[in-house]
Image (cartoon, rainbow, N blue to C red):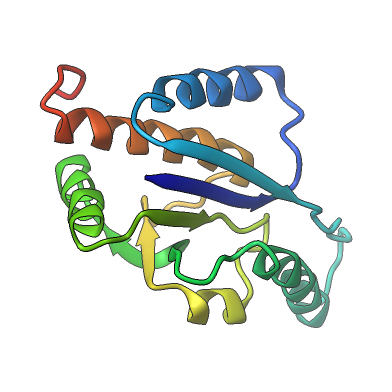
Length: 159
């Protein structure tokens, strides 16, 4: 299975890069993982709603260039479906059983995802009604994908 994570911005914090590297290494036995970083837009301190929408649209255009035809697109969105780890594992297993060999997870920038990206998604996933920094969300997502593969392989990790 091929898994892409598409997200705006570069990870600057060493501890987050280390965690991403660790989960990438762990996942290498289960899937081919690609992390695709697109340029993010700087948000002015006193941005208007119109500026916010423009920023999301620009980031969305950059993200859209990496969405592959035939890939199953999962957008991380606060209004998406919330699942426990076991149910998320079942969802990934079910996608694989039904021929989804390429899954692309889309993480928005600090303002979220453009409506065009959300409407293009095959499924919207929420990890919580809380808002997380988009850089940290990469680590959380990788950990849950790794946990799902371990659950589906009936290997110890999940409690």
